[in-house]
Image 1 (cartoon, one colour):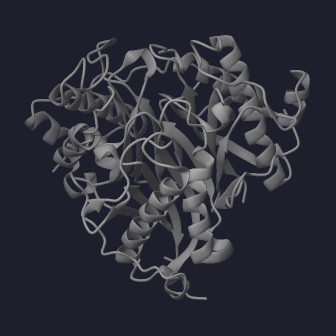
Image 2 (tube, rainbow over the protein chains, first blue to last red):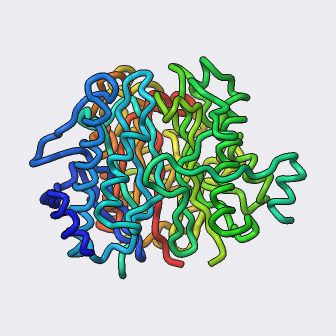
Length: 153
Length: 153
Length: 153
């Protein structure tokens, strides 16, 4: 099934792709790989999740933030290759979780990102992943997510 | 020499590959590159190294943890491509060290991973590397290691 | 215009490539991709920027450190492929910022790296990027930068 249709069936849609803050690009294609820049949980130009997971935010709120960052990443992908139908598979997802001291459920937070990708792309959405905690993120975002995606050339 | 034989000569063997916790994959192949998910120092289903390097663990203990994470990563590689003999070379290693305040020997910890890879694969085990400290890791693991490996198609 | 000439026009030059500390390589080529190891702001064998950005260093000092790390990365690239003229494009830049509590301007620090790459390579220097904060870095460096670069085969 078409990924955009699945997204719609889940009651979601791709946001308008945001411009990067600085002299870099939202994504770069080399061969059939698309490297997507680190995405924050922005929605309509504002961060929807700020602060440290495990103190300022719950796991559920952080999962929601991870989903929003994934939507922003996919908006960049769709902006580059016209449609998510040209995605062959998601290759790697990097998840950085702004973590309060002693918060060690980064994998659960990252599942918010992983489950959404599988919901949208099915088996083609299953990916390699690295999820780690960090002490600070840009703009005090709760999570940052980056992707490598294989696309039809 | 065969990597599995070298491993045996060093008194080590590959563990049974562990299942990822969540809807992602232990590794994904695209072209001749294999992206291996972040691996923790698990052994027989339990973490063998927990806490902050420089406070709860010594450098030597963290190096041992890095070696265990590498064995787990290679178990995933072998599970995917049948034998480590099909590894052309190790391309990149990412090492995240759960670091106590003022612990700055992340490179020494990462050498535990790097030295083992060279021991197993010889020159083909020499890789590009990024080693950084982080304030928290999943399950309070002492280290997390991810790999990109080139394999015979 | 030749990247080495642009660099000279900006009053800069490539340092001598430093040897990695450990059994890894400064960069590894696979196909037309070059993976460059994490680089610190070393100059003539010494770190020029140490400590936490937002406490021990200003944003401007951290940007200068990011530029120095980029010069070191490009020295490794030039050492591998003879000349920066063989760079097709910069694909991805990873920036790790040694961050004081509540420092959230990692993107501004990373712009030091990004702007220099665009200055040297023009549009071919525009890249995907992930910039995050971390609590500790090797040798207490203020920043660590890693690159993926596409090169002529």
